Amino acid sequence: MYRRVLVAIDASRESTAVLKKGKALAEASSADLVVAHVVEQPYINYAYGELVAQQYLPSVEEIKKQIMPTLLQHMESADVSADLLKVELGTPVDTITEMATEGEFDLLVVGSHGRHGLQLLLGSTANGVLHHAKCDVLAVRVFDE
Image (tube, rainbow, N blue to C red; front, top):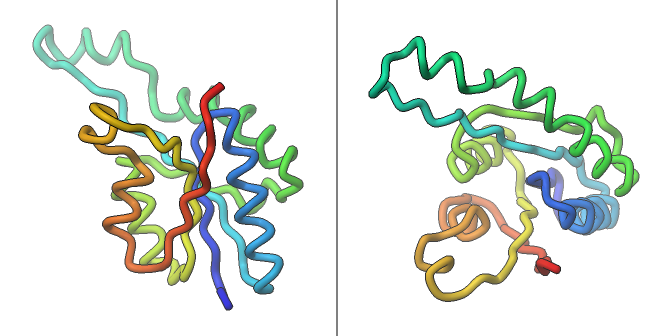
């Protein structure tokens, strides 16, 4: 059914459930599996000068270093090899959809909190991916506790 499955995760506790669903679909289709996490570039306000901004914002490498234990814990909990994890820098929707297109993935799995009202109007990563991906998208429903 599917040849290549890309699972996009964040650092939330629900990521393990999303990973497990993506892994199960990949196994059922004998598909290749890749897991992606996107680190957003910290916002820099240059109003007080670049030197001040650089002093107080963590570098991308520091952010990656901080997030890796959480991501690896999700990988282990879902019994997915850490070698399948790709951590990229960018805007989540754009980066995930670009990865899916460039990697010729035919299924993209994301978590969805199913929010309503203002949160829905403002958009979400799952909603953005759903509308911009050129492949099938599975939004795994996860719930905030």
